[in-house]
Amino acid sequence: MLLTEYRRGVGVLLTPVIALVVWLGVFGAGTPWPGPWLKLAETVHQVSVEPFVIAAAVWQAGRERRRGTRDLLSVTPRARWQRLSLSWASIVLGGALGVLLPLLVGTVLVALHDGYMAPGWWWLIVNTFLGIGFHAAVGTVVGVLVPSPLLGLVGAVAAYVALFGTSLRGVLLLGQTPIAGWPPPPDFRVPNSGPQVLMALWLVMSTAALIAVVSQHRAAFVVIPVALALAVVLHARAENVGWFWRVDQHADELICRDNVCVLREDLHQLDLVFAAAKPVLDKVSGIPGAPTTAVPGEGATHLWVARRDLDWSGKSVRDPGDTYFRRTLVWSVVHHPESCSAAADLSRVAGAWWLADPGMLEASTDSAALLDRLNRLDVVAQRKWFGDFLAAVRRCDEPALMALR
Image 1: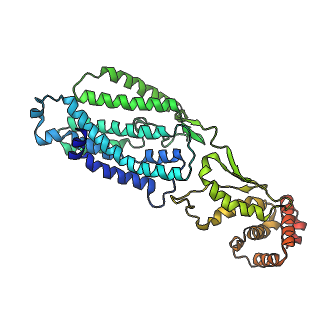
Image 2 (image 1 turned 90 degrees about the vertical axis):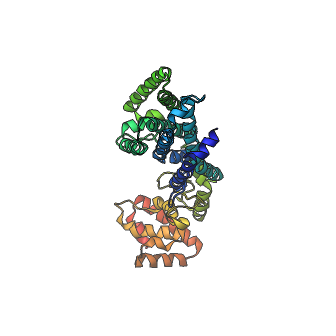
Image 3 (image 1 turned 90 degrees about the horizontal axis):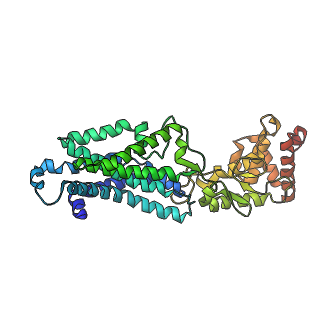
């Protein structure tokens, strides 16, 4: 019966609409790869499919009134709550299938990139689907109670838009994403299971209560728990948005391969980082004072592994060829203190020599001439020059820096 209701109602039309909206939100032009797993879940969760679900449910629930069959159906063996539940379920099925298609594609791609699987990331997905059921119930109530289908549809969607960004919407829409004016969740965060369970129960009980009330059944057994759950959630969100999140103790651990390291949360980037950083380390291996490791975080004694946005093919977004990423790797090592003006052009020359990247010279004629002279030296002399530069720039030894020109 459910599949028949789905095919003959608006659920079958809702599926491609939701699929398109979610697809654009996850895979749209210029959208970076939303990995690891928690990022994928957040990206899917934050796509606003609710107005479409509400509108479809309003139209579906008003079908008996539009067709003038309410009195006729009231004398059939099937109870009113069964008819409304079937109508509601067909909309939930349509919305869930629409979300499921892009989600499955994203799941495959995140798995192929070996994204970090933070604990509890799946809670956002679970509550996303439960949220579809809740909003379908809201639309069903409006469709049954409002005489005009068009008025009900416009009013329900307008009410949703009016609530967008308010604290009430933050509660009704699961409360997992901070809203404007509230402090951000902690770094390396993962969903806190307790609040997520509460939100799941809140959505299930609220959905059941709405269907029961509109079906003219007693709903006290669900209304009271809903009120208690809502009170707890309101209090928790008023006190601290971080209650919905906890710090992931493992996300910032270093995962290394031959002295090239990334955070565990960025494990999917290790191959790319290694391919860029290892040749840079090898070029200066054995030079006194030269870095021997590449790790996240800025510092003068190691290469700085900055976080990058990747596209769905695993390539850097807005950085073709990893040019800026490679420059970031070495800049903290060769960069001079602001008070050490004598090292300004030498820092660019050292970086350009290290990366074989003349673009770091910024069209300076003097720097280009110095780089040319440096490259004409034999390898031993080049490496000695670079070691002398590192020793001098860290002390801001101006006479020693001047001698290197």
